[in-house]
Length: 402
Ligand SMILES: Nc1ncnc2c1ncn2[C@@H]1O[C@H](COP(=O)(O)OP(=O)(O)OP(=O)(O)O)[C@@H](O)[C@H]1O
Ligand SMILES: [Mg+2]
Image (spheres, protein in one colour):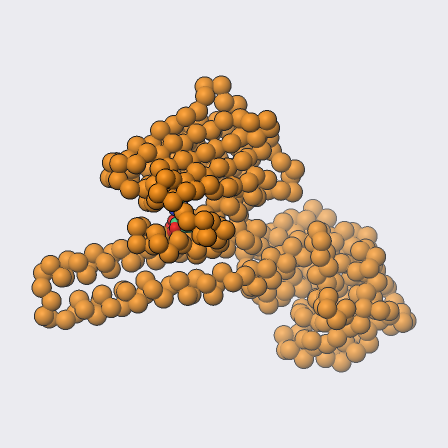
């Protein structure tokens, strides 16, 4: 590729493309590789590498390099003290060195495994809001030139995106979501396996056959609900779900949600009553996500309330908040279960037979409300009913909140 042809605009265009590309993977190694290749490309350098910071041992280790796929240099340790990487991170500033061989801070051991002698170097810190992730370094400006201010700006912008993407990937990998999911998959899979096995037996009668098909349909529905809840949760946890700033009236959202859930309520001879005053002010939030939350909570109210029950969906402005209340007169939640109610996959043992579910609904709701800068609470009494209270700021919270 002819690097000379890259204008500043073209570089920033590339950067935008790369940013989208970075946020599309949750695999750390793939991500790091994309970052180093993008860094070499954007800064018109011979190679680029990433040093990740190990907070516990206060040192860096090489984790990826654009010119090397072999793990030879992976894990090579660079001390924090008196290293170029250390200087970049402690100053939180980029650094250009155009004569690396004569800089005492240069880590000479890297030449051997990479086969690249460092002449010039441009390093930028990888830092998120509150965490040092590491350092991104571009090595040897092409055509024997020096790294420029412009290279530095572009690499700094890439570094900022890269740090967030690395942090997200790590958070995702650490999350217990996957192991919990695998655990949860076992029950429906076991039922499916048993049901399909029985179905293949010649001795079963017509009634049994219909029952088995029914149970296979139920279990596959459950698996598919689980898959979409799981994806929602994973996207929310990794910060990959965009939040809109819609200006809307909550009455409309509650009405829509009521309509969506009406037939489920009718199936159980339940009523859903709306209580919203006419002069309720507009609010700014992600309309679809607030609707998703309300529908989820109405669905719980229907599921965990006996036939004939009554559900009230109310909204009111209180100070600078919009308060939404969803009240049912159902089974209620025992006090010992209340502290666990927002945990992923948690379901009240006594109610498990009352209705099917994945136990992800409320944790997704909590995450959505909290990302809006709001709060969700549950009050409940066994055999008398449950009230879910949502507090949302009326006006859009600070930009970094969602
Ligand atoms: N209105 C309610 N009345 C009584 N119990 C409730 C109510 N809402 C939630 N619960 C209890 O809290 C548990 C967790 O609710 P959550 O919505 O997270 O999961 P779920 O409804 O079981 O599954 P899904 O992921 O499909 O929503 C439920 O399983 C139920 O035991
Ligand atoms: Mg639910």
